[in-house]
Length: 220
View 1 (tube, rainbow, N blue to C red):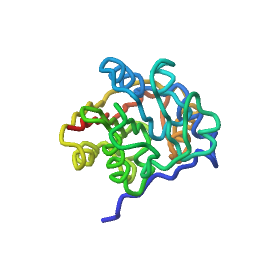
View 2 (view 1 turned 60 degrees about the vertical axis):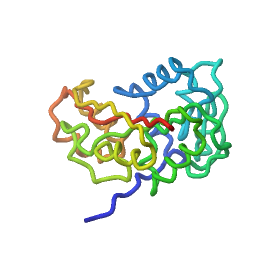
View 3 (view 1 turned 90 degrees about the horizontal axis):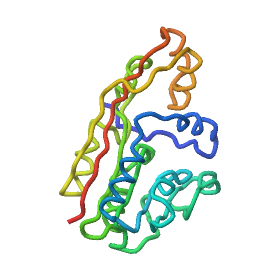
View 4 (view 1 turned 60 degrees about the horizontal axis):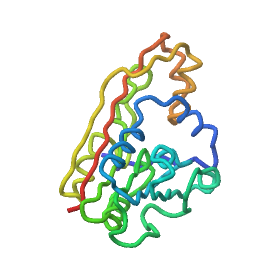
């Protein structure tokens, strides 16, 4: 059996793909995570793999927030406070954060558990960790199941549970949007690091089923 591999990180070498992937994204979790952080006053917030700072923008200027990203390009274009740093070596004191988010990024790491343990270290007691991923059979109407990565929705709750005792999960498995033509299908595939040639055999318009999960763990 092949060992799961980390997805390549191309945010500096191919920024256009990232822009395609994030434009008009459906079924995202940033809004729900921000709402929960605000509702429970989980501050300060550490956003690991923050990209250009979407979570911080949703939280608003009154929330103590720090983005962490290993991509110089993402850091250069980020909104709000951000540090160029490694998810597995956070430049943050022990027990100083109310929430740590690692959204759509743990599958880029060879050892996601290292980053999850770092999140646990910097969280205060009662603080929450958030992570998310798609399932391997996401978007089945337009692509075959992909190979396993280091952090897929199928195993995400179990992986987070190796570090956090109190774990919850929200899953989704439903059609979320329609791609009107093959050009849109190709853009969607490119944005998700898939072969755009799959679009040649798709009858459009096509409704796309999104499958994945948001996992959270509370530090006791």
